Every structure is written in C-alpha cells, then in structure tokens.
Image 1 (cartoon, rainbow, N blue to C red):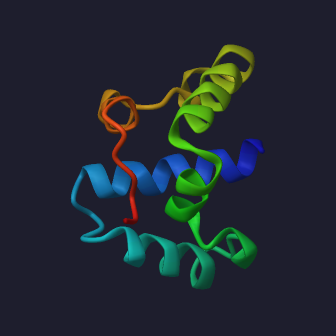
Image 2: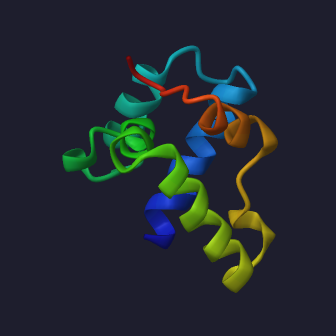
Image 3: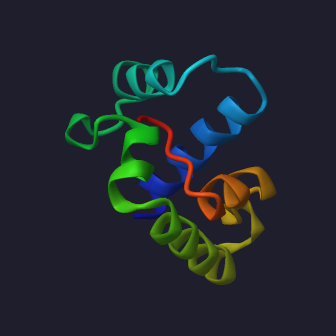
Length: 88
C-alpha cells in the first residue's frame, strides 16, 4: 500500500500542478513508464477504485507513521470532499 499510494499521490500532484493534462495520461504513463500494476488501471484509476475518502485516510495513516511526504495535498482533499473523481 505504501508504494502504490505514494505513486498515486504523486500523479495527483502532477495533475494538480498541470504537469499532466488528463487523468488518462497519468494512468497510461504510470503503467507504461513507472511499471505501476496494470490491474489497478493506473495511479489515478486506483484512487477512484478504492475511493478517494479511503485513499486520503490511508495516506494520513501512512503520514502519521512514516512522515509528511505521505500527507495528501489540500487540493486532493478538496476533490475528495466534493465527490470529484478523476474519471467519470
């Protein structure tokens, strides 16, 4: 979970900072470029699949145990709070 969540959070951060232009680009790049497990659909699909609220809770727990680098951004928290998904 630690590695999956860290890579997924970095993809979300890339989308937040306009490094990525779409969630689909993030998913494809994460599978083909980073070797993210294909069964997840990619980093951002992974967040959608497990649920944004669950993802944020997991990352907060990881941050408490392993450090702030696992803490989700305010942008990601707001997306989750408002019910936004990366894919429709």
